[in-house]
Amino acid sequence: MAKFLIGIDAGNTSSKAVVFDEGGKMVASSSTKSSERMHLAPRGRGFEEFDVDELWSMVSQCIKRAIGKAGVSAEDIAGVGVTSFGNGVVFLDESGWSIAPGCFSQDYRANDIISLYQKEGTYDKINRMVHGTLFAGEPGPILRWYKEHERPVYDRIGSVLMFKDYLMYRLSGRFATDLNVFGGSFMVDMDTMEYSRELMDLYGIPEMFDKLPALYSSPEQIVGTVTQEAAEMTGLKEGTPIAAGMMDILASLVGAGATGDGVITSIAGSWCINETHSDRVIPNASSNMPYIHKNEYLNCSYTGASATNYEWFHHVLGDKARLAAVYEQRDYYDVLNEWILKADPNMDTPYFQPFVASPSIHVNARAGFSNLNMHTSYGELCYAVVEGIAFIHKHHIDFLISAGLPAKLIRLTGGMAKSSVWTQIFADTMGLPVEVVECDETGAHGVAIVAGIGAGIYKNYEEAFARSVKLKPRVLPNAEKAAFYQKRYAEWQRLNQHLLRYWEGGQDG
Image (cartoon, rainbow, N blue to C red; front, side):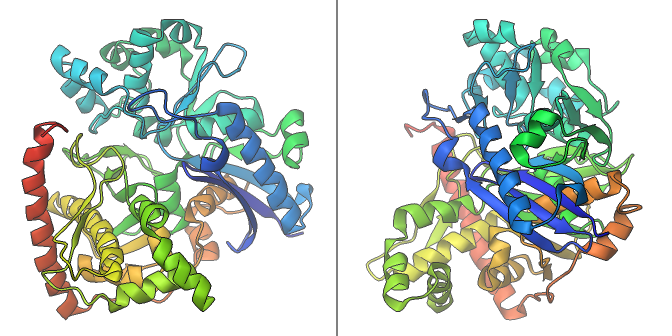
């Protein structure tokens, strides 16, 4: 009897449930635009919040629809895995009810808390313990903010969960998390790979130590099973195993089978994520979080926006392409790709700083076009956005390479990976071969794989990759274009250095 696996990838802009067969084929999927229902209006500058109960409502519906579309029996679903972005903190009371809006990782209300840590002399101590660079959207600063500014909510907290952990709780009734997502959210001492009272003290939230969920060391461990209530809401069978899962950036790496030496995984999605793995901590990395194997780290360099920049462009400046697509009865993105190819960039065409979201290369960094003139075309603007996204990825990949981490090729996932035009620009910019997996939903596939290992469908990661990961033909960089992009990239960096002086002066300049 064939068995199936479900991977749930709950994101900032959309949540999806995907049914996979044992060979990694997507049998069916269902998604919901989170921005249409879940996002809450900002309560003030820096607030990026979501409706916690609406999150579960959307995801449970996605699961039920995906199972229905797949036409498979609930009894044939061997396991469920859940992933989401890091941080995304949720506060529940002792009974498991939400007591405040959830916070996205782009929430920067706690910038003043980061400044406080720096003044207290605890900022560097925290970074040393977590092997990363603390920013305002992490749960520690947000919890401290609640303690300082909304104490009645803080005093009612019974459990602290991340975005994906809340979904696991609603599925299983268990307050549980995995080492990767809590380590990557800077809530774990990375030297001991355990919770730390000292770390909670440094955050100024010692009361929260006893509010932390059960910590599972490996993503394939089974944390619980589907409850009767969850079964009724999702269409899953009561008792179906649920794996611990992991953060979406590690899930995408696993879903792409990118565990080989010298492989850099780039995720061009909501965030600009660039990652590889090694047996050492990389100083000044965005994070060095737990990996799938013990005694290894997932070394990451990232900022808060990648393809999000293109999404912004689509919403704000996409009307011309949309009208052309309707008039020509063509796909909108095909039209954009055609205009990008016709842009014929040179050293005088526009540049784009891809910083529409935080955190970024500076706390005050903002996006913008430069080098425009009366002859600048719409296609050149389209091209500049894609190039700018590739450049910010190069910025981070160069950091990893400069730290001594090998880079033989790149596995590209996320929105950019769906376009052959974008993929070629990416390869030319990096000067490295780029591989794209056939499966578009690598995050969901990654947690389906770990659920499959936990449920006994696969013996180990190696067997899972051999059976379920398929690659498209490799995209090689064009040597002539790679040299051109090196010149463009140097100019883009120079522009950023000029802007840095403005950013350092604050938004008032």
